Image (cartoon, rainbow over all chains, first blue to last red; front, side, top):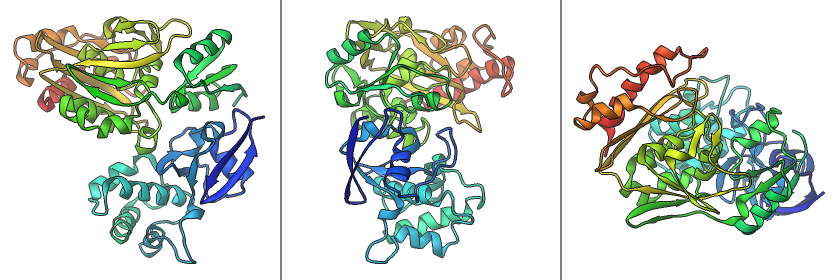
Length: 154
Length: 262
């Protein structure tokens, strides 16, 4: 089995993987970071979104072996010095979650959105950009409000 | 997912060698279609030849627009030369899948797969692009040969897509509300030597709509398409839409594409 190494949330990690090991399996099962979720088996829901070399990708639709040497940020890597990331804080303040299962992917996708498009996001832009993240609880209203508020505070 | 042997060649030549050595191998570019297909058991290649290490991405604009095969949808959507030369192509790329898919999926992967509801094949056919491979150049008119099939030979790999610069071009799609794939997408171009109109999402693979092209030849405007009916010869029906409904959508989307053309 090939051995790979990555930097996950700033820490060097390594492990052996099969060709078919998905990035999300490596993150959850090898490294034990279970904040990144698997919500579907069809690459649609976005619960597994992480930042790879600064860009949001679906870790369920990426081979771990192809990411040897990558820098990965998961939801566990966002808070610093005991303080939530502004986007996490905004999801909390705006009730941008109910069951919370989609939230790690939502938060990472939202940070990626701000990184690409800036802090001043219209509701229309936010809704369009969240096309790859599905929530079955909230009806999205409070998620959109959270992203808008979180973006402004980033 | 079935396991496979993983290869990560550093050159096109090595990729082709690996493919020739392993007849059941598949090339993988962004993997945004292939990995889901493998997870569902719809594909189980013995070997994956990952083209990611080729670093074959980028755009160059001269008398034509050349996009290297490994360029992601996100890169095409945000590239200044693409936006300037063929804004419809940048707009098309910006609406493939979702942001996360666009960070991974590539133009070469999309056209080599030739999904009957993919967006890029319609742009290639609508603009009269030329597909560059490791071995030759293939006109888009000859490249797309039907449902998930292309003129690529065993082991042949797409290296770039070359788009001639149109006077104007536009794209409009009616996305399936659930999958967001095109129920019908129409790419129109006023090439300077005639109008072209390519349709995706109709079920059997991308094709040129002669009825639309004939009407636009009389004047590249939405008004030219009033009353134009497209037959159901190339159109399939399924649980999402009947063939007649899709055929009707072709004219509707063609009008929107012409209206949006820049």
